[in-house]
Amino acid sequence: MQLPLLDNYKVKLVSVLVAMLFWFVVVTENEYDDIITVAIRPVNIPEDRIVVNDLPATARVKFKGNGKTLLGLRYFGDAAVELDLSHTDDQALIPLTPDMVSVSRASQELQALAIIEPDQVEVKLARLKQKRVKIIPQIEIEADAGFALIGGIRLLPDSLTIKGPVPHVRSITEIKTEKRHFERVRTAFRGHVPLVPFADSLRIQLPLHEVTFEADVQKLLEYEIQEVPVHVINVPANLEITALPSVATVTVVGGEKQLLELDLKPEDIFLYIDYDYSREHKNEDHKIFFKPIDGIEIRKIYPSTYILEIRRK
Image 1 (cartoon, rainbow, N blue to C red):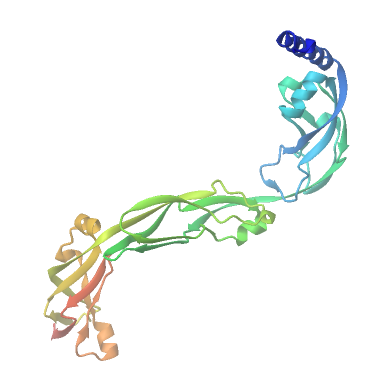
Image 2 (image 1 turned 180 degrees about the vertical axis):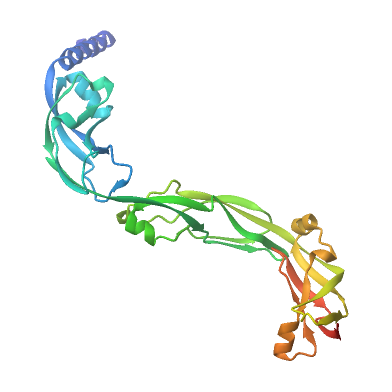
């Protein structure tokens, strides 16, 4: 048996919904007072100053207006109590008044009647300083056997301009990345790494909170370069000194791509004997030195010791 209440239930349901919608429209057109929580926002901060104390995040404001606009502000609107700091000294206690309330264009019809709480805000300013600071990578890369990291970790950017209170900025000499560790790497790669944040109490502002890093991992290549000239330096003006033998064979090790690009020739490697060093250490078999080449290992020099032929001019 069907209940009479359920007869034409769809029509009845639609009628109820229409009635509720009509009631809602009528009610929200009436005027009400409502207390709404809005943000507290400092504005017009002098360019050479920075806020150094914690400000309250929100304030409770009493508004007057029609119900629809009040609902829109409560759930979707943008409103704030704006603290104008353009004429504030290093420290001030600012009373909050309704004329400080700023609302979006959609809520212009509303009237701010009173600030319920807080009734005042303490603001402390300090002189602002900026400085360029180097970024230090805390990234460890272990290349697989037969491979090597060429040229170290490259950061993009490798430094940042920080801003903050003068005494804190002066004491900062570097920014570090967070720690990362990679094992058995066999190819070049890149990624992103966050920067270690400063304590909130320091009020340090960073333009970026992460940087890009690049690691050039290459297969190791080893080969010999023959007939590399051996020079003698720090020779007295009245002497002519020649190393015997006058050339050497040098074994170099480096990344495959790097060595192919460099295409090292004998004249690209600077081998030398320091005559002052030899006299100071009274060496008869004179030790040979070399000028380092970025990213290249001089693994072996043959022969490793030399005789000097000395003639007076």
